Length: 241
Image (cartoon, rainbow, N blue to C red; front, side):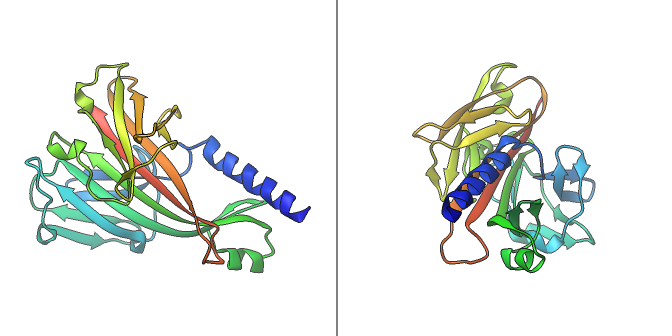
């Protein structure tokens, strides 16, 4: 009976987590006079503070198709955010963050490990580790249609600027460099499309302006008592003029 109840609670927690995918924290980058701020919050304008140490990697790509050398990228850790200064033009930036251990409990999601949650007297339904990736397309260049090598990423198969309002943008979802089927891709409005056997989903663009696509992928973990799965989230952010 305990197993049945636990399985039911796990199922309900997963359903609740996936039911509102555009809520919670997004990851992206904001262009500023001093470079690019790694942003966490609700895109495009609601920024929340975070531990700068959670930002693990940052890549910048030039309009002529080059990956910009790390020598031309300076990291500035500020009190509650990270900023990167890039000394040449950029067409696309990418970032990854490890947000750490999380638990789903009968009292909601908590930002702590299973061990800490149980010490606090919480009933843990499931435990996981959260990693996020994001790509932000800033201007034309070949990297919009090229994988940048993140563990989990959304790759458009055409130029979003060339898709008419109300038209469909085809994207491929890659995990460890391989197409990933039957994964939901969501728009900023919460609309959902699933990838096919080639990892391709077709997203309807609802007009000009800001667009955010996101996907989540849970990978079961068997060798860490503090997590039942690793949750990977990836974003692709762009504007249609």
